[in-house]
Picture 1 (cartoon, rainbow, N blue to C red):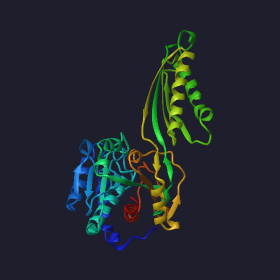
Picture 2 (tube, helix red, strand yellow; picture 1 turned 90 degrees about the vertical axis):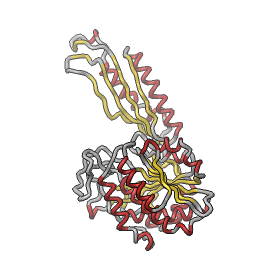
Picture 3 (tube, helix red, strand yellow; picture 1 turned 60 degrees about the horizontal axis):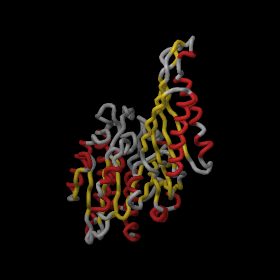
Picture 4 (tube, rainbow, N blue to C red; picture 1 turned 30 degrees about the vertical axis):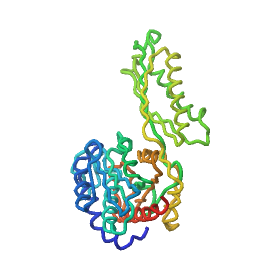
Length: 388
């Protein structure tokens, strides 16, 4: 585990208390009102300029340096999941049906602790620090509307950093990779409409279930036959529903799925092939096929220089080179505007049974890693101001 300096260690009790208070009040995306109030009051209590963000939730904090000519930004997500908590913690969720099952309570605690740390060193600051507490990362996505406000340009942000607690790597280790690290993602819904008939007289109907089965088979050829095998991509149909009874030709069928890719051109190809196949299914099975494709988050693409900065700032034993992850993150929208780096903070601790995956109702972590997160942020800030 990365050793923290004394000024960070002295904040341990504070950041632990912050995490626990925030863990109690999980809220859905764009409804994080109590969470926003907590963050806003904390930053203002430090005399850090702070204002409520988009849609009345989220907080933007600004710590000004002496010159204030450039700004380094740090982002934490603040929303929770619609999960019923089963951790048994004494500070478990008081909002029934919601839980911080993805570590966002930890992300907020790390960034608030880092804000307090940097406020204590404000006499040494030449440059500004922007603290972005972003709503709705889990959906429908808060990063894009924040970027569209022109926030990064307004504050002359030179680069941005974000982290995620991650139980797939050992507690206290830092995982990252240069270039594409997390996938671009999209969702699709397919509606097939035929004509019902008695199962004993199938020729009088148009079987939507049969068309759906052909669609499922056809979609599974998209990656294998249209995408370069050296380019990672995933097309998954996770749900299919059709029919009313065993002896009735199905009149309607629904398929729901996702697309994931690391290369934007690959994503577009998958999308285009999906649409063409659906048109063919409609003609081949004499049915109506309608679809909706929702393009979600772009790929998280880590800046090479910032990655080197992170890797060089850590001891070799504390760093893990990650393989690309097909999960997604809307931190990618910030990276469309300025150089950005997203990295993972390991939380796996088998001795303490902290092994549950993200989004699991038993997910938890050792709060010692909050100090590790703060230490890495501090190192990144110190180094980043020297290269921008």
